[in-house]
Length: 309
Image (tube, rainbow, N blue to C red; front, side):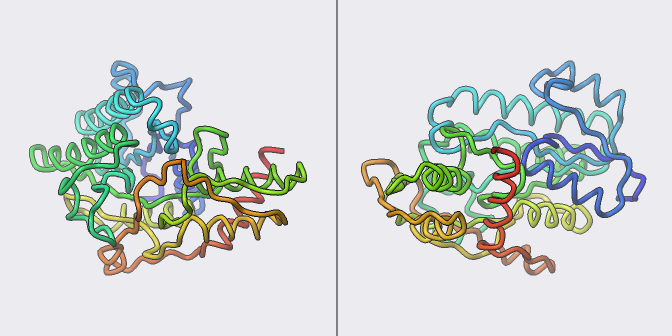
């Protein structure tokens, strides 16, 4: 990508898209195109056709998606499947039609089978059943990966897919019902501290293991791969390290400064037992994460305080 290349960041107001936008601006890219969802509804095929024909971006980061945590995924199953398929289909197809030089599609670690061996290697895709609670979202993302590969095979498009692990950071979603585990816990501990509560109850047993990547590290990896990676099939982006939900909760409790007790509600679902990415493919290309978890949680908590109080 040249510094003057026309680059479209889809989903620039979300946590991932905004991190990618910051990274590109930091690296000196000035010809950046963005549209809010009210300006351009990516679910609307004709609107996307008109946008691509008018703007003709050379590079596309497809970070727009309908996302949410375990409750949202399980509640809005039809919406998660339909809306994500619409967004992907419209953007990927128009990128092909208007001659985009390179497109990056961002997926999610939930594409892997629920009981796949750990850590999750790229080749484990479609080797087993998915986690039931987020199956519609996962199926949409798998379709996006396969679509990029199919357009590469049939039309020679340089469309690549990256699979981030669990993300957190600036501009995260702290909604009480629809957020992911790390931002949900930040909010929960902060509110408990503010209200003088004696305990915080966390869903599940605390035993599932999860990996977390700071969103600005993801953006750095995406920028790196946009310059260096030109293959079909997906590539994982993560830290290669994980911890239990209990240890995560204790870490957030410490950062927020909550003094009360921590209780786990085992009647609530745990989700997948473990989700750790195998990042040896990414490491072999020469990229590794920079922000460790405690530092990242401190940065995210500051951002939460600035934006939500």
